Amino acid sequence: MDFDDTPDQARLRASVRTFLTEHDHELAHGDGAYLEEPGTDRVEALRRTQAVLFDGGLIGLTWPSEYGGGGGTNAQQAVVNEELHRARIAGPIGHVGLGMCGPTVLRHGSEDQKQRYIRRLLRADDLWCQLFSEPGSGSDLAALRTKAVLQDDGWHIQGQKVWTTLAQHSRYGILLCRTNPDAPRHRGLTMFVLDMHAPGVTVRPLRQMNGHQSFNEVFLDDVVIDDSERLGDVDDGWRVALTTLMNERMAVGGGGGEIGIRSDALVAHAAERLPHLDEDRRVLAVQSLGRVLVESLAARYTGYRLQTSLEKGGRPGPEASAGKLTAVRVAHATADLGQRLLGDEAVLARSSEGDWRWATSQASTPGIALAGGADEILRNILGERVLGLAPDRSPATPSKQAESR
Ligand SMILES: Cc1cc2nc3c(=O)[nH]c(=O)nc-3n(C[C@H](O)[C@H](O)[C@H](O)COP(=O)(O)OP(=O)(O)OC[C@H]3O[C@@H](n4cnc5c(N)ncnc54)[C@H](O)[C@@H]3O)c2cc1C
Image 1 (cartoon, rainbow, N blue to C red):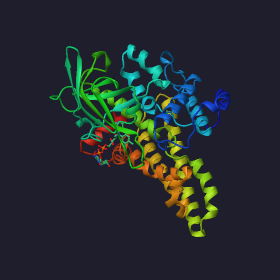
Image 2 (cartoon, helix red, strand yellow):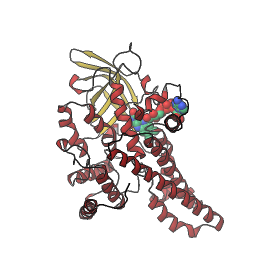
Image 3 (cartoon, rainbow, N blue to C red):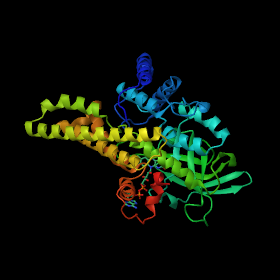
Image 4 (cartoon, rainbow, N blue to C red):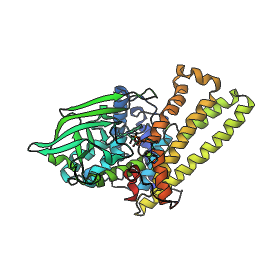
């Protein structure tokens, strides 16, 4: 990958900078994802931010122009992402729609679905959620039991989903159900678009150890979905789900972006806090800072390598799994070091907004390590695909091996 901007990229960068300066007062800011309680006010501010960015052509840059996207390249998107990051613009609230649901509708939806859903999804007019995991099926997704039965008036859905991020704010979700209990487990599944406001849908937020309620239980009690809201063929939902999972892995760290608190915020925090530490702690902190920054750069360049290969027509490979593993490790090490830099004051940090975010991030990263493919599953994938080790025989691993299909 060439790290210097081409003349076109330099022009794009300059115009994005100008746009972000002019619209700064309309945009929400933040130091990193997963740090804010997604309460209604913040969600609304983030929706407005996404709409402003979309209207300025900065969201959905690579998406097809016939559905509201920019029809641009990954390299252009990378330039835009860097500028959003530099300006400390908060990550998009519609990240589940942008990262997972939208790409799935684009690939498997009907023309009518694409026309109805994609533009509004890009602009955060509608938020989306992903209804895959159930109490008895996470890594082993193909074990899911939520049933869909076709009757005269449509598909009748009965079951329960869990850990559904953003469900309480979402208008739509992509829903994976079992439609043929007699078929082998991966063959009897079908994907639908679910209207989250439909009768029979109950959403109950769950409180996590970081204090937030960002994900939910979703109960589906005889919910009826019209057959026109099916995504892909009946009993072919596994193939559709693999599109979602592959994009999820890419979205959570695969593109080389940082998750959790950003490394530049850590450097600023270190500059402020190091003088307050005794010498032993200071030396250890500086060493840790070096390690975190090097690893963060490695994650970013691995992401760039993946983007470059996609640009040249390649398919996402195990780099996305490696990228997510590394991004989570960096996020955890960043939060951990941020806390240690606070020294004894970390214990009292709740009293200060700025300082409390390190503890919040520390309590959030274990969850991020599970979402979008747990660390162990990703390591299984790397073991098989990169190191050539014997495959994991448990049912779980194939469910998350999106990139190998
Ligand atoms: C913050 C967060 C957001 C989420 N958002 C969503 C969402 O929006 N929609 C959605 O559908 N789901 C969501 N999830 C659920 C997520 O996809 C699951 O948590 C994940 O797939 C793991 O499933 P599980 O929790 O059932 O754990 P399990 O699958 O039961 O795994 C438990 C532990 O066992 C390990 N393990 C399991 N199988 C193997 C194996 N074969 N080899 C080695 N180790 C193994 C796992 O790595 C893990 O450490 C979210 C989860 C979190 C934490």
